[in-house]
Each structure stands twice: as structure tokens, then as C-alpha cells.
Amino acid sequence: MTRKTLTFFTVVVFCFSFGLSLDKSPNVIAIKGAKIIPVVGEDIEQGTILIKDGKIEDIGQNVSIPQDAEVYDAQGLIAYPGMIDSYCYLGLQEISAVSATVDSRETGQFNPQVKAVEALWPDSMHIPITMSNGITTAVVVCTGGLISGQVGMIRLAGWTPEEMVIRNSVAMHIQFPSVPRIRRRESQPQEQTSKQIEELKELLNEVRYYQKRKQAAQKNSNLPLPGFDEKLEFLIPVVNGKLPVLISVYADKDIRAAIQFVKDEKLKAIFFGVTDGWKVAEEIKKSGIPVVFGSLYAMPSEWDNGYDAIYRNPGVLAKAGVKFSFSSQSASLAKDLPYHAAKAAAFGLDKKEALKGVTIYPAQIFGVDDSLGSLEKGKAANIVLADGDILELSTNIKRVFIDGKEMDLSNRYTQLLEKYKKR
Image 1 (tube, one colour):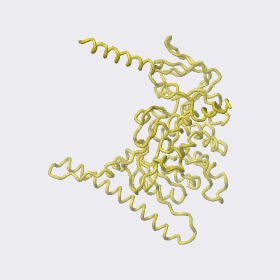
Image 2 (cartoon, helix red, strand yellow):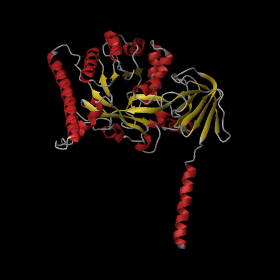
Image 3 (cartoon, one colour):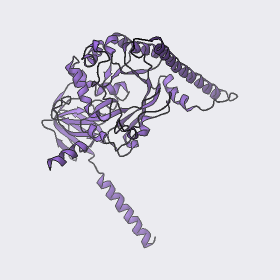
Image 4 (cartoon, one colour):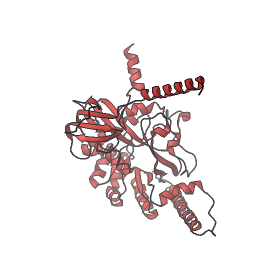
């Protein structure tokens, strides 16, 4: 080996070792002394959370801490699981009024091949702002058309989209046809809505026929395979019930129609929006379909329902036994997720249920409760340390851990704060 070659390899090894040292994080972390709200099970006073390799190794009051562990003193703080936003545009929208910064809307009626996570921008200003308020996971959606595309789930940490993605697809987003609220010429909108529902049904039947042809050709080599159809391919998991449909639906009459549509097509479904859900709570419960509430910053669909109809809605559905979760339905206001749950709690929803609506319930609804949504042994160490009730505006988030790594809580807001402190 020549001297130049030896020198080159020495430099490479040195640089590699230096890079590892920069990214080095403790293998074992102990968060000690906090009040722990695991969300499932009883609260733990003065407990310890032991983190190893990004997961919760142990949790409780009598946890043995290894000598090589990095210990965080959390006396006086409360430990919560990281919150989950069940419907938002984080990483897909920057300034909603500037079209060049909006990548959440697709053109065309049917776009099942579109994946929201493929448009993800990790450097979005809104991601660190949202994460610093205790949200660690988000369901990101694309909109437009009847079938908008595939809904993804991301962690609010990572340099690249690949690092952020938890699951490429947790649901297929459908914008359910709705009859406009007008008093005159009612028949025309009704006919248009019925036609769109029929188009959806026809497409799903086409998918089933396409799948049967594929299966028949695989069993019998004498039969030709159908021509590859990207749209139909991505809808196969939907008609097989393996991928749920996230159906945006709001008015009570449309919710009834959507329930019947799901039943007829034998789909696994999640409802989003359900503004008038309180009017048909028992029917939703009977259908077994969970719901994701839209923004509670919205106005009532009809003033006759009362100014507080949207705030009361979660409490009514929860009392009926419907599984639910909350969303920000935003990018710039995704940081306000806990306050949507808090509003519902102020208008009749049990406060513990409200907290579950931003933690364990969304994890269950989107099928990730084996690793997210609560503080339990074996789950991802997504932990938020706060100095008070996480649903209250006055509470300060002190530390956030995602997959066992402590996050930097600095963001555009903190930068502006420091800037104007020096003024």
C-alpha cells in the first residue's frame, strides 16, 4: 500500500469517527422524578422512564437505573406521551395564500396513486414550531377530487422525508360528495351528488374485476394478465379491507349516506370532519366507524344549531361510544392541536378522554397503537415533559423526546423572541 493510499484511508476513518462522535447520543436515558401520565392505566407519581435504543425499556416507581445511563432530573414536571395530529398539512403547506408553497392539493377526480409523504418538505418552518408544543406525530393528507390520494404518517423529526416517514400509507382519502345547503333548485345538486357516488362505486367495482382478472391469470397461464393500471393497483388494498378509507364528510344527511356507502362497498372506514355528527351519534356508533374531528376553530354549519355546536360535538359522540381523535386541519396552526381537545373538554367531554383523543385514540384509529400513543414498555420513546396540564395554554413544554432522542425546541418563534429581547 502506498503512502498516499494509507494517508487517504486514515483521513476517511478519522472523518467517519468524527461524524459518529457528533451524532453520538446516550444509549440509555433515565427520566427520573416526573409525574407520569401514561394515558392507559393509572398515573404514576414520582416515577422513572428508562429509555434504551429509542424505546421505553421500563417505566414505573421502582425502576433500576443502569450506571451508564444519562439521568434527566424531571422533578416538578409531568411526563406525557407525544401527541398525534390526526389530519394536517405539515410539510405540505407553508403559506396557504401562496400557491407556490402549497403542495397538498391534487388535480383530477381520482388520484389513489398519489402519496402525501412524497411531497413532504422537512425544512418547513411549521414542523419545529408544532413539535415544540408537544406534538411528535402527524397524519398528513392530500386533498382535491373525489379520491385525493394516500394519507401518510410522519414523526416530527428528521433531515429527510425518508427519516420522517413512519408509514407511507395509513388510509386512502375520499372527499365524499355533499349536497350544497341551498333552498332553491335542490334537484340539480342532489342529482350531481348521486352521480358522483355512483362514479365512486363503479370505480371500486372496476378494481374488483381487475383484481379477479389478475388472480385468474396467475392461476391459469393461458389467460392474459390485464394491462397494468396504476390507479386500480393502489385501490386493491382498499377493496380488500386492508387499507381504510378516510372519508371527509360533514352534514348529517351526508354522514348517513357515507355510512350506507361504506356498508354497501364493505370498506374499512374512518370519518373526518363530522361537523353534524352529534345529530346522528347513535347511527355512527352502530356503524362502528371511528371519527377524526376537524378544526374546532371553524364556525357552526348552521347558526340554528347553536354557536357551541362544534364544541359540543365531541362530547356527544364520546357519550354515544364512538371512537374519536382530534386534528388541527392545518399546517400553520398545527401547534394548537391540544387546544382543540381542551375546547371539547370545556363543553362536556371528559378531560381524560380529551387527552386520549390526541394520544392513544388516534394511534388506535390508524393502527399504530402497538408502538405509539401511550407511555408503555416496548413503545417508542415519544415523551413530552411539561410544567403543567398539556391541554392548557399556560403550560410550558420543557423537553421533547422523539424515538428516545431529545429534540431542539428552538424555532422561528423562539428566534423572534430572542431577537426582540435585544431590541
